[in-house]
Image (cartoon, rainbow, N blue to C red; front, side):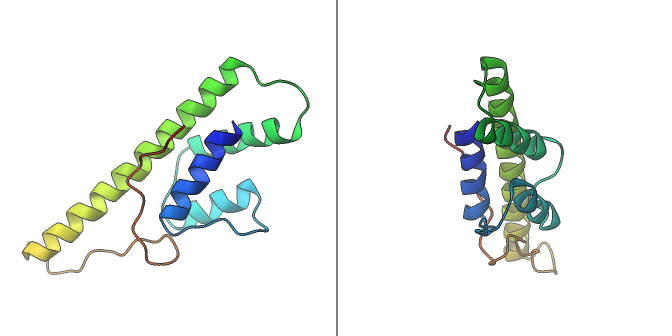
Length: 120
């Protein structure tokens, strides 16, 4: 669970949305949602599992690990799809198919969004 959550943090940081030292999981997810990087229930599900794994003393079973991996896969797919969309918009603009420049990523530092490949 903790490794899955860390992988999500790494992907967000690669997209320009790094974790602040004072961020709780909810703070980070709120900023990611406000930036348009993440939506849906997968990020909150992963954060909930992370909090349980981090702050409880009971073991986390295989069912919860499977839920964490599924949430990470969904987050990864969302980030990959957003990157593909941004790339397509940029290519269309460069070809002259679109007279408006592409919308810059909203990750926080003007960097590209990650392409969604996240190691487990």
